[in-house]
Length: 284
Image (cartoon, rainbow, N blue to C red; front, side, top):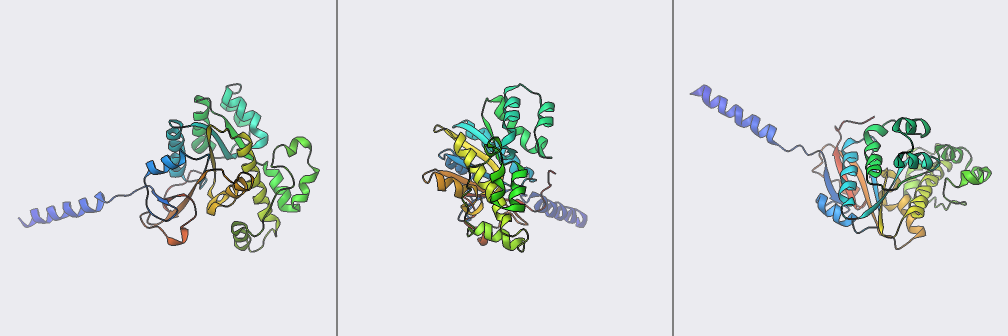
């Protein structure tokens, strides 16, 4: 009898332990209140632009990006765009989407990120299968490097063709934006004023190509590192500078030991905030 009771208690204990929910993510709004995936989709479906921020190596966020894109395609005509493709690779991207070149050829002619096969190829292939435009929005990385080393002035010597791969000069820049100030503090001044300027070049260029390729009856979904649109700055700021009435929904991502607890300091980071476990595996 004693053995039986002990065994039953053991079963009860293990059931309680292993029945506890282990959510892969929790979704919150800007105020830190938990919201449903459906509510996020509903709000995105009414926007002009979605800036879907990510941690580049987080598989849960990449999965959510894909699922969100599929679900929004049932509600809206879509145009896709991403930081992960540089503007001078647009022709190669178009050729792959149209079937003119194979994936192997695309791998050769485009500067694809290391985690492209797992994290971005599903999105590109979705665009290909559904005949959607996919825009390479980022500036060539060598241009950002030039600014980091020698400031905006270094861009003046670029050819006309090269200048077509970035936002028009001169680049509007506000050094007092909190995100750029924070960047300077985090890097302890390393790189001087040119560090946030190189970031601003990327932000301005991504905003420029979003606006250039946006169609009035389409929702433009843009995938970018969350730091490019957190706190309604970066790409968001440049979009609003050009088109103040643009309806934009932003998404950010945070890692936490307990996804069920939202840290107050992260309120206002984005319209929707995805919190994922710090123990989540990485994709690169």
